[in-house]
Amino acid sequence: MKATLTVLGSGTSMGVPTIGCTCRVCHSTDPHDRRTRPSVMVEYNGHCVLIDTTPDFREQAIREKISRLDAILYTHAHADHILGLDDVRPLSFRRDGKIPLYAFDNTARAVEHVFSYIFEANYKFGGIARVEMNRISGPVELFGARFDPISLVHGDAEIQGFRFGAAAYLTDFSEIPPDSKEQMRDLDILFLDALRHKPHPTHSTVENSLRLVEELKPSRAFFTHIAHDLPHEETNRTLPDHVRLAHDGLKLEFDIA
Ligand SMILES: [Zn+2]
Ligand SMILES: [Zn+2]
Ligand SMILES: [Zn+2]
Image (cartoon, rainbow, N blue to C red; front, side):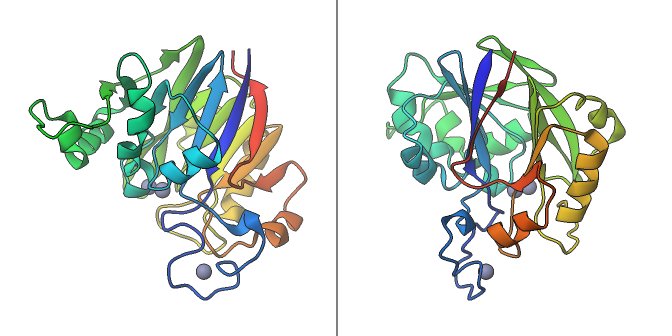
């Protein structure tokens, strides 16, 4: 079964341009240097699955003309990956039943805490997102495709990436454990965190992610969670042909099942 992956956002937690920054990437006229917070959408079989709901979700959904949402998977509960949950409201009102959310227990607990008004049974003011939390600890089957969590090290935290068919989306990691690498054989598309060149305690770098591409050998690799240190065109010229910086709005076809 064919699927389309759309990059909703390719930027790091503060987004690019970064508020108040005077650097050349933040002031670039190249639209690919404008990066909203990191998330992807996967469409197949008439359904739409989202990975993370960023603070830019509203802008991303309007840009990509999203008119339905069938499920949301969470990688972890950092602000740049969850704060747009409230903005799924219009999509949640135009469907039968609540939108199912899927997350590991620690992530689910953090989302329920931050958005306690959504999950409180006695919220009196109406107009809240119609969503329901589902705790997962392994693969989840959605609309004829399987999403396999991939455990990643993100500084001191353990978070999840996901493999779905011939694609894998790994955002926010400093290290990939050996067992997780076993889950990444024969990939067509691999998304990897590549914040910048300079080392960072909780994120991968361009150099580290290039080493991972060599090791894991996907047909195509895309770097994401990109900071304002990396100008799009200039950085792409330094990368091998099958490795590119992702950009907002990028669409890719692949086999999901
Ligand atoms: Zn992040
Ligand atoms: Zn800047
Ligand atoms: Zn994070």
